[in-house]
Image: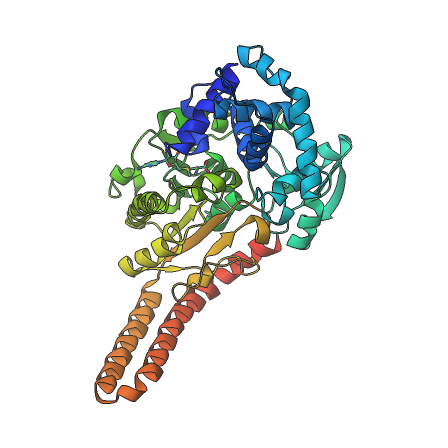
Length: 496
Ligand SMILES: C[S@@+](CC[C@H](N)C(=O)[O-])C[C@H]1O[C@@H](n2cnc3c(N)ncnc32)[C@H](O)[C@@H]1O
């Protein structure tokens, strides 16, 4: 029963906005973190279906009524999960209603004209456009190679369907079930399996040869792309999936300094890194904002990954919780988060030798994404954006000139969790000179058109359009100048 009581307690905390699912799961002290997390994610995904069934089956009526959140997790496991796994006093209550609950589920399917549980969730707004995330599996090259893993899966009876050519192909693939897999078209060393595939008990997963990581969350480390032997910082690192990816990219040779404020998450991270064969890390239970950039220890840090705490609104199981928040509370929370994100990103850019900084969130909110990037670019003219992965279909929202250099990810467009990534590069002295010149000429232009406007009211709209065009040009010029330099490197990423 502890499983269901703990899960119900977490659902309550989520409703009181006391944290994100993952954090609350880690904080609960429940031993089987994976089991608890899976139960919560699925209960949240089925939430509207379960609520409707509970209501029509009149499950929580009467004097000794079952608490709503406990009812939700129990009904989830009875109808959609592994069957009830407890012997507590509420089990008999639920079992007494079993036939009625199944009947209400069947009625609801008829009403919604669907036959599968997944279609029912979709029809009730639980998941976008009937799209389901496939199972993404990153091959940990610290322990094995892509070829060896492919050979292993073929021996296990999985058919290799080759490399995907388009996101549409992945979408079709994700509708299927069976023993086969594809290689991803954007991320090298990423395999894609049908959604129902479960590797939690697979020996390659338990031994750290495979990392179960959403495709979008593989982007930041991939785009940062530190060279072998580089000195890297992972600013907000736990539970460490991106740290292990960074360690694989530098081939365990340089150094990965990883910081996190949360002791429990850091402990989980230690286990994850040990299992993944990471040896180049230095973990610190420390506030990244208090790390001294001038400490000689960080003198050689050339690449920094900033993946700070965010609303998590891009995670499918979080969407409902966030959209249910009252407007003003949501706004306050977003403001607090984006203030921290600005400080963390700005702090990263202040390290004296840093050349590249990648910023990412699993949020869909502009306040945590484009707005943060725009402000930071204004505060740090010595950095510009790199136009990463040109073949990626979903770009930053058009809120500032150059926002198309950023990447967005979503279930409907890229078949991933909702995500955002921007890569900053320190401008060379030549790029900085060019940038200042263009900025200066833009200011002159603006000044001239302002003076003109004082005299001629009628040309106001034309002048401001001209001024806007010019500022767009600046960003494109600086983007294309950095783009040329990165082109060779990024072509490699795109092709692989
Ligand atoms: C989105 S999670 C990071 C996920 C991680 N990058 C990964 O891929 O596994 C954000 C992390 O930032 C940590 N955090 C929040 N404020 C921090 C701070 N001031 N300094 C360091 N870490 C912080 C949180 O504890 C949390 O673990």
